[in-house]
Image 1 (cartoon, rainbow, N blue to C red):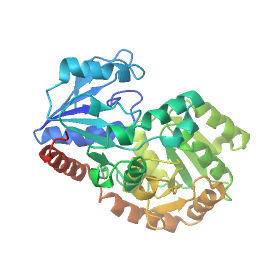
Image 2: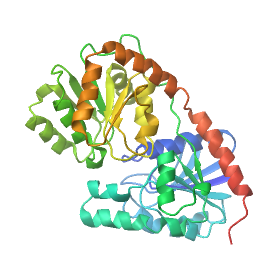
Image 3: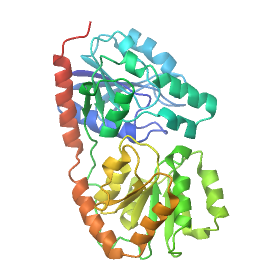
Image 4: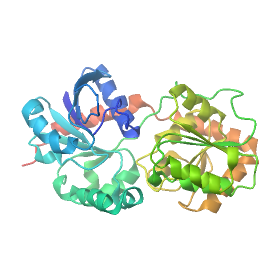
Length: 369
């Protein structure tokens, strides 16, 4: 197959996240299977306009802000007619690729913002994001979808997409890279957050829950970068948490692995995610997760088996779950064993195989008139 991907970013972009990792893990493997893959995406200041990543030929056009205005024209001039199927990865504002004139279009959806945009952006920008998603059910009504969770499939159904058009294919995890390490668990109860420091990620809820814990010798380590960091630091200071809360900034893959291994639990309080790959990375390291019982997240954590799910925004419930783990190292270990077993059932190879099969079925479908 000749596959054209359209996404706002590639994995080298400084603002890349889980959606870009997901895209490259799957379609890089399809290149190894003999398929031709091209990615049209935005760039950033100083980025080369063309490169090859994971065997994928990358075309960078404009920047994060100008890409949606330049992408369709670039496609028409340089890429139209060069692929068997166009795959749009909708993880920000939709680009409405069904209107681009490609014969075959498939849409890959990690998750959509919906009303959560108002938790992150100023009202005018949030309204623009919310409004941009509104035509989804109409513009994409005849397009096959691939969603990364049942929660995303349900979200699409609420927006007018026929559930019969949506194939759920869970992401994978590199369980050979993310592994437990005997003796790596910290001596004192240590909790961690790993991800972007954005308001909508709910890191402030994690800090407040940590402050409400009964175990005053516990430690919280926060890894990641983002424009919400300064406010989170001020919050931790206002709660008189001192050196018990450590902001690590952006960390390397080696530091990330060490953090997940030494943690007693990963804490995650987002109101909505497509899936929660970090939860599976922690699980692969035999580290339980304490998380909000939110769409997407609830599918990457098994309550009472690989960690604990609590009502989103319930600080007391999250603090109680963290206290329960802090008081019982044997519980941490038993949940960790089950978490590792759970994580091993998700592989990128499986996700790539299922995506290949889905694309094959898409190409066999009758072209909508």
